[in-house]
Length: 579
Image (cartoon, rainbow, N blue to C red):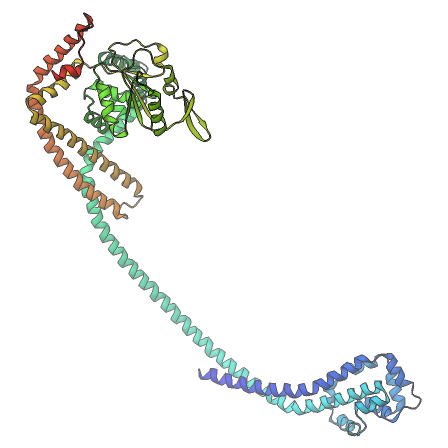
């Protein structure tokens, strides 16, 4: 700080001297510049004018004698004319060594005898000659410049000394600043090291806290996934086995959907057995215990169907698959009305529209369903369908104006992808022409002896032990809901695990969800275990009524065959069950 103050004082002193010198010099320069400007105004004609004097006026001669003196020539008119005869005369005047004149005190002393003359003034000389006036101004300017330069010479020396002092002070200050910068750089380096050390310490603390949190999460993760390990391992083995047979299983499923719908349960079993034998013959890997339900539907979905009044026998489950998985709209051969009842229950929450071909304006209801995406059930059809239904059956949709439409009658109806169309017939053994069969999927919903037995045993229990029937119905719903919840939680856990990336412990969402899922799963498993025990007890009681249901099933088929003797003996399954 002291060195900076000393340097500042030295700089101020030097600037003061320099300013003073410049001020005095600036006083002389205007006169010099005026003289030079006056010289610039001269040309050869002006000089020729002066030379033309045979005997110059006195003032002109005095001025030119002064010019001769400054150029070191003899002070006479003849010498003056020689100078003016020089083509470089004006240039020599402009480029005169005025600094050399300032150092020649003897010459400037001689020049004073002209300068001090009263007539040696530009205004007076101008009256005699304009060119001589410019030369007079030049002489006086050289004299003033020389005197000013001599006057500021000591100050220049003083300035030189002050600048030397300033340079020394600045050098000393620079050295001090360099030392200070080195110290500051060292301090900055140490500060940087300190900051890095603090950051590293903070990072280590954060990592330690993260490790503690991850340890807790890892314990929860292991605890949560430990219960799933056994089931996942078993499912993994099943999937590995299924992958080997996936091509063959899907091939059989495609054939089943395409061709098996119209056949009875016994014929379907024999048909699948022949397909399996053919697959083995051509070395197409298939599951030897192949079942359509194992390939094309999830168990949770079949449970939902059964809750919605679909019988739980294999034939009914297969029919449910054919209805929901086929590409063509289903036409259900449903003399007992089981399929009809199931569709109404299943699509009740979607405002299913029920129509008949005899219903007035049934096409309006169908059009509304197509437009709004509601399911439509066409029931009690005969062996011939209305030709107006053909665009719907063939799904003849096309794009117009960026929107899918279907031409129904004479109108183009906007087609909603949520639209579903179901057809049922009460004919026990209808004969449909090939042109109808290729437009729909014919599905045989005729009840079987075993299937009817399972349905009637429930009716018998409901009649004899209504408390057990009610409890069983509630348990079926509860078990289905718990299994669906466990399936949902399993899918959620797998989804979170797949999205967690490389670090499973980084996201607390997975751990919290897993912990909550474990608690929910445990609760569901506990309820399901209790429900299974109750269902076993109910099934034991139910089995005691099975002989009655078996006889009732046989009796129904005997009564149904009476219609072969006389058409008047026709009884619906619903009427028989109510009896």
